[in-house]
Image 1 (cartoon, rainbow, N blue to C red):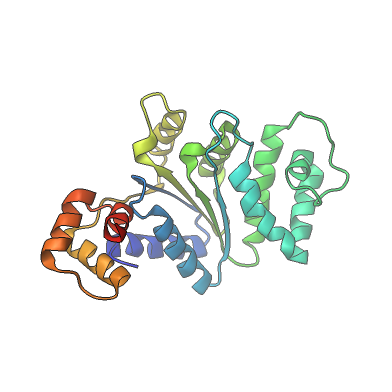
Image 2: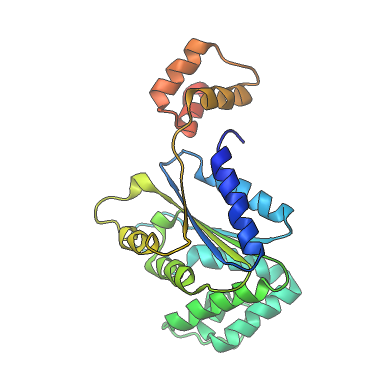
Length: 248
């Protein structure tokens, strides 16, 4: 893991605040390939070392189809593997039947109709996170919000506005270079950035020195200065593009 010392210090600070019972919401943004996933994996690793329960899900690029709550369902499925955590999900599904439909097997009595009571589902997800956090702090990671459906965006807004207690951290990432003028994520971001206490981590490209360290780690040895300079200029300091140029 190269660089990002400032971001990691901020990550450690927000995990500490969450462990003290002050819920945290953090937005991680940056261009494609700049290292958002690697930072989130570092965040997850630091959280696990603190004894936190880490739940991770990601949106998928499906155009206008957009499966409702896909990254959230992906994350919550991890709870079903633990009997006690599964009981927590089942309890939430009794008050929010829609949650049982999203997580088949959790509540066999869940209705099979098409309608979902969104407010029930949102509140049930919050209840699951806060309830699980009574055992140990919880980190919920939702990647690629720029591909998320409207229901998932609504859930992020709901959690950001209503999480007032509980040892919970919600970390959300999105590609800033994907947000065209009419992108549906823009109104949500405009709303979230006005919330007090919300943390924003905007990842920029690597400096030349950071990129040299990154490329040396991949190649197994330091690269000639002129090669590093050429890759830095062509990649603009983007780690992923630099890796591809090195491979080529």
